[in-house]
Length: 307
Image 1 (tube, rainbow, N blue to C red):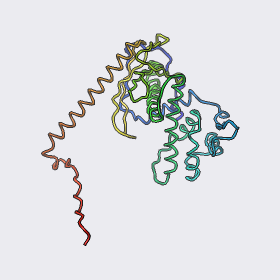
Image 2 (cartoon, helix red, strand yellow; image 1 turned 90 degrees about the vertical axis):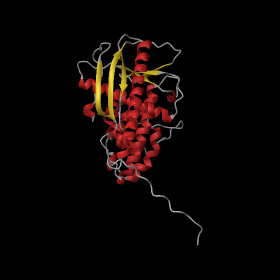
Image 3 (tube, helix red, strand yellow; image 1 turned 120 degrees about the horizontal axis):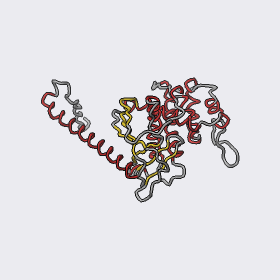
Image 4 (cartoon, rainbow, N blue to C red; image 1 turned 60 degrees about the vertical axis):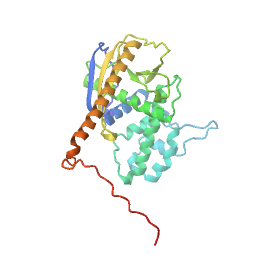
């Protein structure tokens, strides 16, 4: 996976109105590219990665420090570690830095087993991913006023890694015309802030929140990327369908384009739901013949008084 990393995602300034498409790509693969990109931007020297966090009195917060040092120095691979050791180290993940979690995640990107025999490893990687999403979001939000709880931070972190990964895909597929270095994303009310949108700086992993009453300074004349999202599927089967357009770096242009894109997505979702309902209605008389007959659970046996 390291061979897919892109050291720079913007070498020229795109024109306003320019578009890029990311059609039918595994969302998981794009997120992985985002992880690698974040690691490359924040990459710390090994000496720094091996420094475990400590309490004020100098004692280590990480109980399984030797375990993590061996992983981070690549003296061993996670898949080679005994399940008991993996489980014993999971509790320490909350103390690791964003850079340490990124290093661990990059090392395990190709470890895809869901076998029950590797349940300890799966749980460990799920915890690494969850903690990483929190720390990535927190890193982007440094200096910003927000009240996001861990769940909201994870949701934002997942969005940010997709943006980083998408920027890498565009740069790789269109080296002569990479997307803007700054991407605007919409924020919902559940995002834990009164901001309506955020400006993501993909080059140095920063995020500016746009609130309704605050003036938003774009700082430079370079266009901003806005995404139209038509992603489909669930879980590991999710397929990313993005269209990216470069817009003028102004609050009106960015918010207007985000609003249009969101309205279009809502209309498509409504139409899809209406078509699904229509198909169910039209096929109901022939449901059994078409193999669409719903499975009806057998009625529960009556429970009477004991003989």
